[in-house]
Length: 363
Image 1 (cartoon, rainbow, N blue to C red):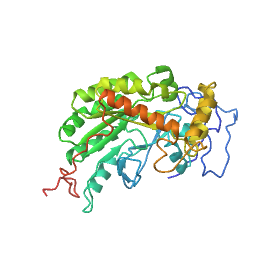
Image 2: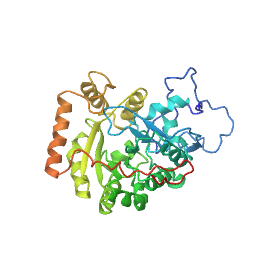
Image 3: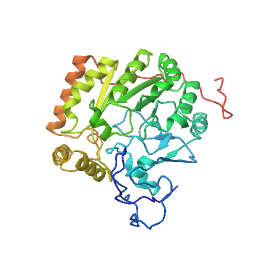
Image 4: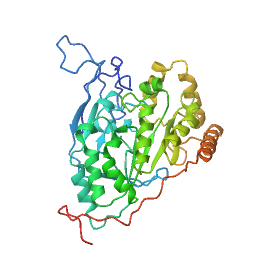
C-alpha cells in the first residue's frame, strides 16, 4: 500500500505534535510544497492543528519476526502503523517512508489500523509448524496509543493470546494498559504476561514537548503501581536517554519506578536512524536551542562520530567512556533499589493451538 502525503514539507508548527513538519522520505522521487491556492481549505486542513486520520489496512499477516541480538524477543505484533504519541526521536518513523508518507507529521497523524489482527493471529497460531515463543506488543508502534481507546485492536489480540495461553510482553508509554488488567492479571498468574512502562523524564514540561500525546510521567508511574498491585510483573524502562536533556534523571526515574512496584529496569540511548536525525535536530532547535548543539555533540561522541550507529551490540547504548558511565550508573542504582536487570521468563509450555476453525484444539 502506498500513499502520497498531501501535507507540505515545512508547514507551520503543529500544536500538540512532535515533528515540526513533513520532510520527504528517502524513497520519494517528487518534491512537494504546500501553496495557498485561494480556495477554502477542507475541514482539518489547518496546518497548525492537523487532525489524526485512521486508515484501515488489509494486512495479510500479523506476526513479525526478527533475529536481532539486541532485542529480547523474536516475535512481535504491531496493531497499528504510525503513532500518535508524537515522540520526535521515535526510531520507527522511517517505516512511514515505505508507504510513500513522511516520517514527520504524517507518522503522527496518518495512522493505519489492522482491524483483522485477531483473526490473522488465530490463523497463524493454528498453523501446524507454529512454535510458541513470547510475542511482544509495542516494538514498532505503541499498542496503547490514543486510537486504541476506540479501536480496541490491541485488546482483541490479547483476548486471543489469553484464550490460547500464549505468552506476551508489552512495552508502552500509556496508562491505557490498565484497561486490560482483566486479561493481563490472570495471564500473569500463569506466567504468561509482563509489562514494561517507558519513562523518559519526570519533568512534565519536558515530557509535553518530547512525547506530546503520551501519558504524563506520573500517570505512567501510577500504571506501574496498579499493574504491580494486580500481580502483573512490571518493569520500568528509561528510554531513550538523551544526553544533556534527560540523562541527569536516570537515578530518579529508577527510584520512582522501584517505589511504584517495578521489579526490573532497563535503559537505551536515543537512536536517530535515517530521517529521524533531521526531525530530532529540528525539534531540539525549536524547543531547546541552547542545548541542541551540546546534545548532538555528545551523541556523536557516543556513536563513533556519527548521528546514528546501526550496528548490533552498540546501536541501543552507544559506546565509549560516556556509555560505560551510563551503564555503571544503572547497575549501581539497580543494586541499591533491588531492581533486576531482566524480566522473568514466561511459560511457553501451556500454549493451546486453536483449530483452523477458531476453536482450541484438544491436543
